[in-house]
Amino acid sequence: ISGDAILSGRVVVISEEAEIGGHLICGAQTIDVRGSIGRSIYCGGYTLTLDTSADIGDNIFFGGYSLKTRSGSNVGRDIFAGLYQASLGGDIGRNLTLGGAALELSGNVGRNVTLEIDEGDENAPDMGPMFAMWFQMETPEKVAVGLNVAESSEIGGKLTYTSPTQLSVGIEAVPEGGVAFQTPVPAPEADGASPPPDESARDRGVIGAILMRLLKGMRQFATLMILGGLLLWLLPKA
Image 1 (cartoon, one colour):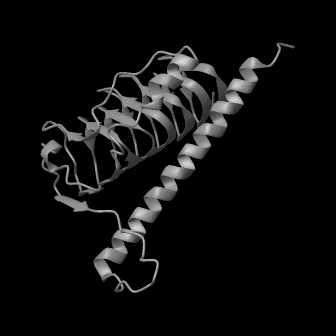
Image 2: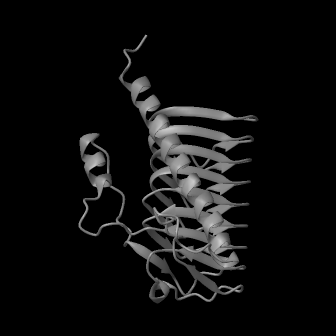
């Protein structure tokens, strides 16, 4: 396909032989990319997987439950994702920006990694397996809650993560730009008596607001795309 591919369904597979010169715009329960995408991927779904032969020219924008990139896969520029879990073993040419509860990074990132990790209530149920059971889908392999960066991972820039607690114990790699830990900026006091934040806190607030907006937008996009795909799947065949 020389231009863009707009696909929806219960399962979407881009085979090893497939070459899409433009963008892949996709909404499905399960999305498996094994071929070549010349531009970017815009996807909402339960799971998105990049197989070992996947080659993405530009970016990935994904909202859903689980993102997995296998070793050997390549994203030419950036990944932006709002999800529950991610296991990233492939290469990312530039930046990784992600909001979620569980991240496992064993691949390489050319520039910066910016994360918002919210582990949530450990006693709260994980809705992902329940969703898979309701719609008779295969549950993806579980990623440990929190942040885990393998020693073999190479990060060419800075790793910045925002979390209620420090997660440094899971960071085994040494990013070239170092590691920065930030806590979420608390909401202002109701009586307005709290002192104004300093410059560093204000900067953290801006970054956190951007990430939270990205996360919410991705989740909304995923919900709409999944519902649209389900409606198309359930409609009587013409």
